[in-house]
Image 1 (tube, rainbow, N blue to C red):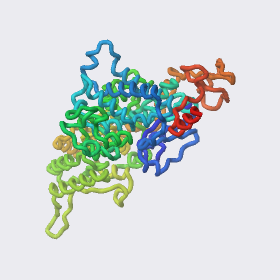
Image 2 (cartoon, rainbow, N blue to C red; image 1 turned 45 degrees about the horizontal axis):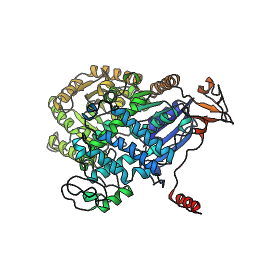
Image 3 (cartoon, rainbow, N blue to C red; image 1 turned 90 degrees about the vertical axis):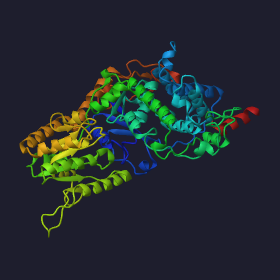
Image 4 (cartoon, one colour; image 1 turned 135 degrees about the vertical axis):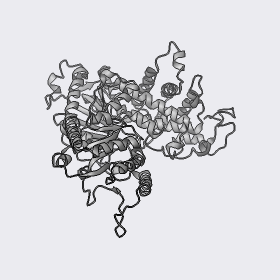
Length: 632
C-alpha cells in the first residue's frame, strides 16, 4: 500500500524529533511505499539537511512552518464574506464560555461548529489559492475582537487587549498554514491509501484535510500528547512568535481606560478599528505581533484562547482518525479525556534497539554492588535535589555507598541546575578522608557519557548495581527501558508511564519523597539475589514489549486493518471523462506495480470536471492588467 507519513519538526530532518522512530518504521516496512510530507520547524533545521532515505520512500515534500510569505491573493467581495463567516465562527467557538452552548438549544455542538469553520477555511484556501494574507489581515483581528466581546464569552477572553488579540491572531495564522498547502490534490495525499501522522497538532492537520477532500483514512500516533505539552510548556508551545510592532499597547500609543478605542468610541476595552492606534493597524496588516520572551509573559487571555484552539483541534483529530495509537497508557488517558473513542485506540509501545545493551544485559554482572546510578538529561524535571537528599539517608544506613550522576545538562537551565546540584552535593557530603594524610573523596560524582570511565551509554548503566529514576514529570521513560535492557534492578518514581513500563520488575515510590526513595534503594542494596531476579525479569519484559520488531509489526497490522475497513473510494475516469468500472483491482493493495493507470482520478465526492485544477484568485498585478484590458 501507499502510506503518506506526516511529520512536523521531525523525520526526515537530521535534527528532527522522533526521526529515529520514523526511520525504523519506514525501513521495517519495505514492502510498502511511503511518501513523506514534513513541516519544518525552524530555518536552522532546514539548513542541517535530511537523513538518507531508503528506496521505498518515493516522494518527499516539505513546507516551512516557521515562516510563510504572503501569497499575494486578493479576495473578492464574496471570498471576503466567506472568510469573515468561517473565521468568525472559529473565533466564536474559542471564546465561548462553558454555559454558552447549553443556553442555545438549537445550536450545533461546539465540535461540529469548530469542524465546519476549519473545513470552510480549507475550502476557501483551495478555491482562492491561499489563506495567508487573509489570516494576517485586520479583518481576522476584528473577528477575534467581536468574539471576545460577545455575550457569553469567557471572562478571560473579555479581558483581551490589542496586544493579546495580535498574539492570538499570529498564532492561529501559523497553526493554520497547512490549509494553504497544495498537498491535497489527486497526485499528492489524494493518491495514498492512508495518512499516518507522527504526532498530533499541526502534523495531523494535513491528514484531516486529506480525509476531508479525498476521503483518505488517518492514523495518529502520539508518544507524547501535544495538548499536554502545550499546557506544560506555556500558551505559545514551542517558543515565541517573533515579530515587531505590537509592544506597549500594540504600537506605542498610550490608551486610557485599559485599551484602545474602537471606531468613534474611546476609553474602556481593547479594540482594533478606525479609531484605534495607527501603528497597531499597520502591525495587523503586516501580520506581525509582539515578541513574547517566555511563557511567563503570556497573558491569561492568550493562554485561554490558544488552549481552547489546541483542545478543539485535538478533539477533531481524534474524532476523524480511523485509529489512534498512543505510546503508553498515560498518553491514552490524556487522549480519552480529550474525546478520543476507546474503540479506535491501539496502544503501540515505542520500539528501541536492544543490541547496544546486549553485552551488559547478557554478560556477567561486574557492577560495583555498592553504587547507585542515575542516567539522563540534567534538568529540573528530573528532581536530582530529591535524589541527593535521599542519598544522604542511604549513606546513614550504608556508609560505603556511592552515587554516580551520568548525563549532560539540557540547555542553559540545565547548566544552572547542574551547578546547584554540585553545590548541594558538596554541602551534604563534605570530602571524606580515611586519615589525616589522605585526600578526601566525595561519594557523589557528576560525569558525562563519552569519557574514559563511561565511554558508552551501556557502560553508564553497567556502572552500578541499582539504577534510579527520580523524575517529577515524565512521559515515556526511555532511560528506564534502557536500564531494563541492561538487566538492572531499578527504583523509580511513580510519574508518567513508569508503572506501565516497569510492571512488577522494579520498585516504584511516590515522587518528591526522598525517604521512600532511600528506603527502596537500601532494600535492593542489601539483597543481591533480589536485584538479580528483578534485573532478569526486567530485561525479559523489555525484550518482549519495547523492541523495534514489535513496534513495526503492530503498525503493519494497524495499516492492514485500516485499509480493509476504510478503503479510499476513487473514481477513475477515461480520456472522455467517463468513469471506468473495476479500474482499481484488488491487487492494487498488494506490494508491487500491478496496474499502469494513465487515466485521471476524480475525487470521491465530485464529478469528472472537478478533477481539473481549481480556480485561483488573481494577484494584484494580474487584477490591474485584467482591469485595463476590460477598459479597452
